[in-house]
Image (cartoon, rainbow, N blue to C red):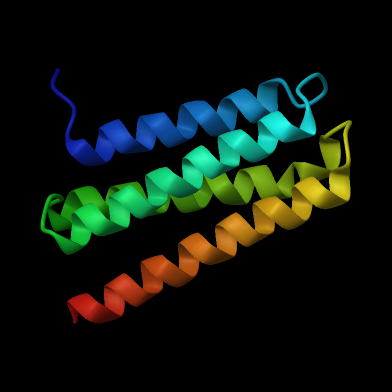
Amino acid sequence: MEMTPGEFFSELVNCKADYILENRNIIELDTVFIIMKNVTNLCDIILESKRRGFFEEKDYQYLSKQITKKLEELVDNAHLFSNDRQKIYINLQKNLDTWIRQRDMLSKEAQ
């Protein structure tokens, strides 16, 4: 079955987020930040793609929900990390806040 662009990007974000959650006790702090930077970059690509009309609205809505859910899950589970929990939590929260702010801004632009 062929994936829509929204499903494809959602899978990428989910895989990166799941990797962080599954390996939270062994991965280094730097690795978490690198992966989160990748997620942030993906979010930027998604938002820019939406602006350029790459995604159909239903794709974007699906993707938006999936990413928000996954980032929230990471923030909710940040206390489980064995490394510097505070730094991870702040970084994850910042990623989530940035994503939501950009997502909401894009929604306003579309109206």
